[in-house]
Length: 180
Image 1: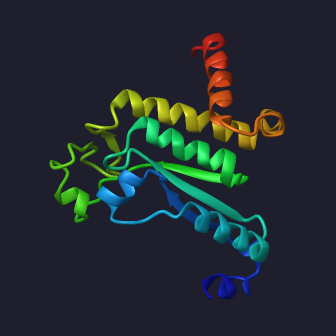
Image 2: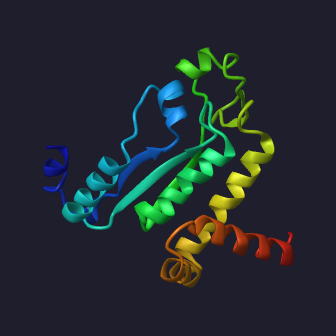
């Protein structure tokens, strides 16, 4: 019903954000009290595309309570290999005032900025180094999706599974040649 109602809007007038957040079952079940259904998510996303066009952006979050860097990478791989969306956004988890995680930050060992925007700095499952790696990974993938689209086309054309590992090798190569 929601998709049907949205299809009445002109797709040129808005960008639809579809919150994926994470595919990590442990994080979803134990920490966020939500469920993720892979097939249903993809099916609904394709239905939205059919009704609204390509003005759809999938949104993920890094550093969710209980999430590890490996779990975050699985979400990125899902985004690249299965969702295959042309636009995505990744934001760092925020510990917002008056939220559950603000009130229980100590229970989750969340260390965050005390001033707005209250970004997570690190936790017991997502270290500062993990956050730096996640930010670097997302920066380069955005670069490949927006400016260096030839890299994205090459990977999509030649790699059907585990696209993320190919992107990581490209990123490591670029970083080794241009460390600054």
